[in-house]
Image 1 (cartoon, rainbow, N blue to C red):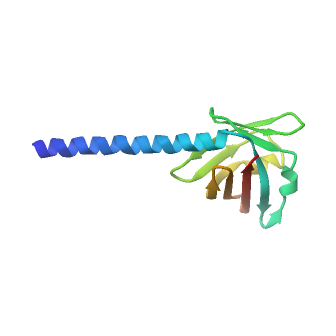
Image 2 (image 1 turned 60 degrees about the vertical axis):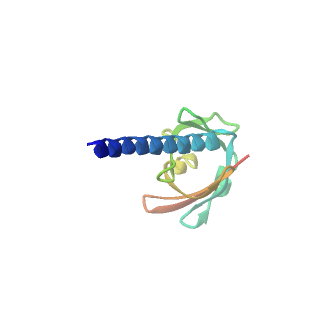
Image 3 (image 1 turned 90 degrees about the vertical axis):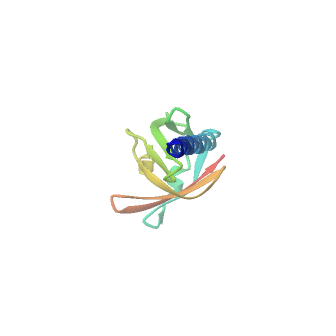
Length: 135
């Protein structure tokens, strides 16, 4: 009986540790993404470089899950979600037109650091590559 209780107690402890680790990973993603503004270094769609379409914009990610595409025109607002376990970032600018609407996707993070993210996605059979860098 004691060994069953010990195993149950260990299982609870490990579950708590896993949740703590997951929370710390989420906090790290939030800290990295929400500190400073980001700009597009490179954006390719099906191999075509359309980076210059994004040159007027910088992106501000907020802790509440909102995101703004900032330029001299009024900001374009949307939502974002980072999943450190799946290594994805989801962005959705609901009312955006191109080029900002091309950001609407679940992006698989291929490479990243505190000041850059390289990600890929496929939307409607269009392969997209995104390289964001912090200002």
